[in-house]
Amino acid sequence: MFFYGYSMERILERYERYSYAERQLLANDDTESNGNWTLEYAKLKARVEVLQRNQRHFMGEELDSLSLKDLQNLEHQIDSALKHVKEKEKAIAQQAEWEQQNPVLDSPTILLPQPMQPLNIRSSHLARGIGDEEELPPIQHRANALLPAWMLRHLNE
Image (cartoon, rainbow, N blue to C red; front, side):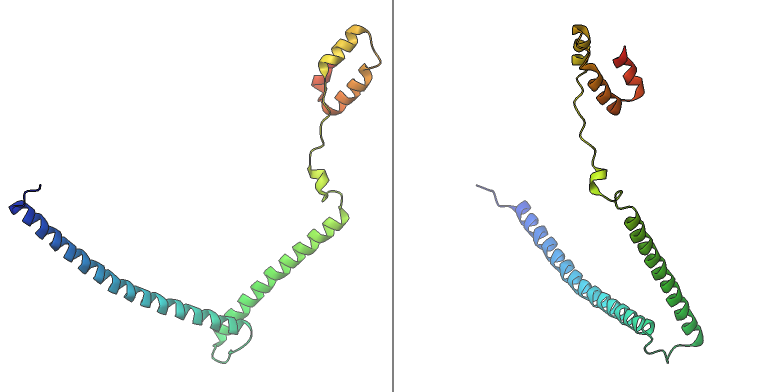
């Protein structure tokens, strides 16, 4: 069994004291976080209102309250946006025209590598050794299509 003494009482007192302090901190944090959330909500709500007002201005609504400088700034923003829209439209039209003029290049089969025919070099050397010269040209013809020139020299030797 445990011996309950003076040190145990001190441990329990410290535990209660720290537990109480932690509960107080958590309660304060909850109060602060509620305050933070309230502040955050107010900021976000104001931001939404500004964005909605700007959207109405871009749509040409509620322009009476704007000054001459504000109207010029709005016009500049709209001109800039229109320029970007026209550039995007032009790029899409050019892409569509290019795809119509080059339908083969857009084909998915052109992107896939063609399967390679197996090249049996050893059998061509055996064919040469046996004297069966009729088999050699088709193998060399296939090799010409698949191998670079520096490798073809070794086949012809």
